[in-house]
Structure formats: structure tokens, C-alpha cells
Image (cartoon, rainbow, N blue to C red; front, side, top):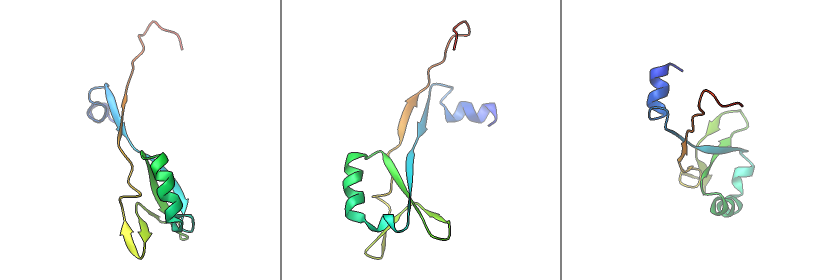
Length: 89
């Protein structure tokens, strides 16, 4: 990544916004009640549905309709901590 783009993405090296996902098979995504229960425990984690042909979808099918809300992650801001050049790893 170009330095200018990295500085923009990290707010001048201070923090970065990330999203966490889990990828599940199409068949696993049919268990909507279970996924809703898991989502209550892990609200920050999004769901990617992997179809049998290998294509990914960022939504689930619930009663034949797209449900993007259950698959949506929460964006998490991570503070970046810079070590001083004199510190050891």
C-alpha cells in the first residue's frame, strides 16, 4: 500500500477501522435461528455465505428474501500503538 493511502486509512497512523467476518457454507447459513443466537453472542462478527460454486455473498437468504442485517458486522476501531525505535521486540 502506498504511504499516503496508508496514512489516510489509519488516520495518520493513529487507528484503523476493521470488520471481522466468518465464512459459512450455504447449507450452514440455512440454520437462521442458530445464526441469530450466535449473532447475539458475537454481534461484531459478520457472516459471509459461500455458495457451492465458490461465490461469496454478504447476505443471508431468509424466507427467500435477502437479509443483510444478520450478516452485517460492526466496524471496530483499533488503536495503533507505535514502539519507540530504541525498544526491543
